[in-house]
Amino acid sequence: MLSLKQLCHLCLRSHISLLAAILGGILGMVLFYAFPDTGTQHVFIAIIIGVVSGLSATGVYEALKEKILPAKEAKVVHMVIDNPVKIDDDYGE
Image (cartoon, rainbow, N blue to C red):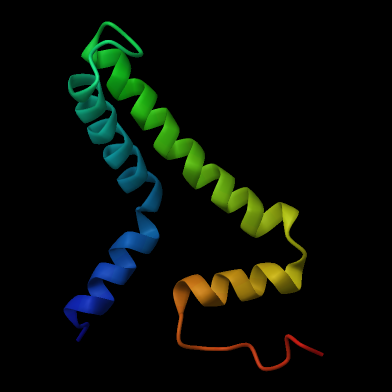
């Protein structure tokens, strides 16, 4: 049986792109109404900009984790994000 913490972790891990897009859209709408003189003239465009921003942040993270960082550093980044209490003992060698 999964605990609530484990269930939330699984949900966040498997749907991080969707959550980033939703959060970006919400923030785009909030910023549209908070600062009406800047940016776009339509709330729909502000939401789209927020969604794209959230998705691009997720994409940059994945690119850094998989393509740009060397394999050992990517392993450490992955370990720190997924299990912040664990330390890779052989990293300093």
